Length: 428
Ligand code: EPU
Image (tube, rainbow, N blue to C red; front, side, top):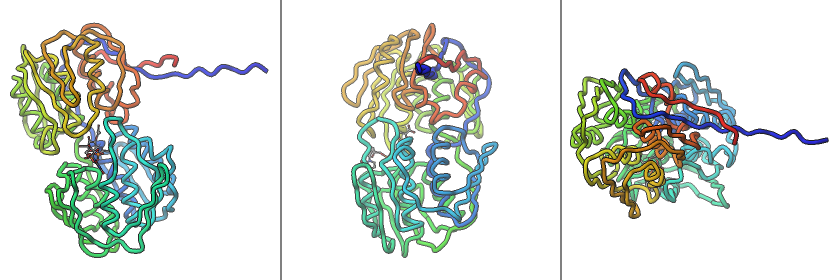
């Protein structure tokens, strides 16, 4: 019998650019918080509730792991209830762990709860080698034995015991993972040179609401006094400072009385300071930012750093803005080795950029023209959206799954303020 041919479809984002944007964009809950809060929830022996949870594919991928472990999750209207009092410690397979980076938080959480965890190496954006050696060293300091077979990691501990742990680099993931592993350990753990990102404070607050004893989150030394049990807890996911930053950059380029709502000003301070230097018209009032694009942007230099420095996750979006600045700007990425994947597409659209390893020299202003481009990773994808919005003509972005991992309703939010943007399905 002849076989029926199967047609595969793929989604693309299509943008007709060069339109001013007006109105309001509301910021969703932070991806990089919720992806740690969900694994943290399994530590509780009762039901926990998370508010302001973004409906992004990373949330779904983590809930698939919760369900695999036999946990219960109910997600409705941005509220997520998780009950893991009856979960089972099952091996987290590679097809679930490699969907995203944050699956690695199940290492710390399962190790803490069961003193045993089996899980495959995480996925995530291809922006550098991204080892997890600091996580592993931290778990070992707490008393765990770690066995690595291929991509599979097995963690075992008779007891987890509080320890002094120094991080060679203030890693966000290692700080959170060690916090999760240490929260029920015997005695006190100190993490020094801890990362200070707001997402870490959000996770520590959630754990404390469940009964943990963590102090110093948001500073470079975190103290974790082990407790026996964690119970009911609630948390509001903080607003996504990277999503906010992406829309703020869009507003700087195209805003005509464009308001970005639901931000925490201190979380976007480094970006606002750079935009002011460029001559962008910004008014901040409580948790809102009103943006009007200037006629001309000053060229500036941007160097990514750990919080409260300029965030690496906004370096790529910022590079699209720098193509419109008058003169030579320098963009330097210091956190990852490979965050320049988007540059060739900006060049294809007409940008004048020279890349030397982690540095891009961007000379502007150049008028961008719509082209077929690719979202090579999440923030590269956001950068292509920005470039498409400012370009003349039509931009078609492929591999948009990367974008949908981290930006809730991006097409709807931009359409609402006047952008011509849609998702289409085409034959693969
Ligand atoms: N690093 C190591 N060894 C480790 C851990 C990190 O060498 O054990 C290195 C990394 O290779 C990198 C640097 O340290 O060069 C920083 O890594 P970090 O651990 O801080 O990053 P992460 O936890 O893997 C999170 C976010 C990233 C964000 C960074 C920095 C999540 C799930 N991911 O990654 O988000 O760029 O912190 O702020 O929270 C994104 O959202 O686009 C994204 C990549």
